[in-house]
Image 1 (cartoon, rainbow, N blue to C red):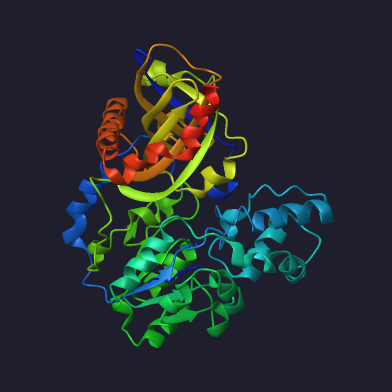
Image 2: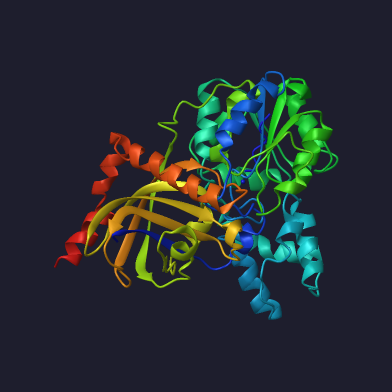
Amino acid sequence: MVRGRVFGGSLWAVELATEPDQANVGRDRLGWAGLDWRIEQAAQSNLRQPRISCSLLSFPLYASLDLTSGFDKVINEALKNFLVKKYGIQWDGREAHRAVGKTPSEAAAAIVAGYELPCTSEDLLKELSPLLSDQWSNISPLPGANRLINHLRRHGTPMALASNSPKSFIEQKISNHLGWKESFSAIVSCDEVGAAKPSPDIFLETAKQLNVEPSSCLVIEDSIPGATAGKAAGMSVVAVPSLPKQSHLYTMADEVINSLFDFRPELWGLPPFDDWIEETLPVDTWHIGGPVIKGYGRGSKVLGIPTANLSTEGFADRVSEYPSGVYFGWAGLSKRGIYKMVMSIGWNPYFDNSEKTIEPWLLHDFEEDFYGEELRLVVVGYIRPEANFPSLESLIAKIHDDRRVAERALELPIYSKCRDDPYLTSLLQNGSG
């Protein structure tokens, strides 16, 4: 059951740093570092549970259902404005981890207590509700959510949505997403059962409405209360932690993955995705860019790859929306041309980053630096999640392996056509003028 919480002569790499992402405080800090997860997953494929007959979505189809990346756009903004105007208090997200997976009342209570607000949780909810009601239907789904729902629906896998949110909240959140409501055979909210998660009541009620045994259900869940509830209901659980550096807390889950891009249905007896191409997953293209600025120089000194920073001013929200991992695409330099690139998004644990960064590597030998030059990126595909490495040598080897995958994939028509993206070609036209 998938319970949807509807939540030069040298090589040049460019590092783009963002402001600290409070909303993503909990996702594992993985950078270019990582073990080959596909080999590990394949080795485990014969060790999974019996065939699953239905999927319960309990993960963050919307990044904003809990205090996660999408939340940063809606609830984060509402809380920031409300707390400053009402109490002169700056919202810094420090209580986010206490609210993930909770009911609205429980989340409000955590915020009231954490910030020592002179009001009750009921008062806070009452004042915030009007600020949020017009925004729920505008929330974007997490990368990979549409893909998963469409895949399971296409293969006739029964799906249900089980959430600690009230039914009215859920309906508002899914209303603007074509086909979502029709995809779920059941939608169960916290106001339909005796107790919210971590009680198993929501999941048991959902299985009842689907007329299936709990043991035949797979829960995809982002929160610890939700994962705990799924196991208590006798279901299999795949956890997709909504906060960074929290994977080790999900010991109750049968599997923990970095993002929805990394879910492998075949490990659970469900139909496999058929959209992976040459070890890559096509994604909706997205753009980011700015002037290249001087950085820490660690890429050149430590990795043997010159690095620089790319300012994220105006792009921080976009970077925070995407799961950490290794992506690839095309890069344009205003005075030089268009090049293949591969990049990581994340916290790079090897270097102990305190900020989420994006580090694109332009796959070309440059004879000189290009600080100050306009750089634009068109991201077209995903390679793998971030992962920890046991040594610097294994990290460097994996970076070069990612390069080989990206270079080969970018020759495929589905990716090569994006070299002519107007976001890049217009840069060259302006740069030569």
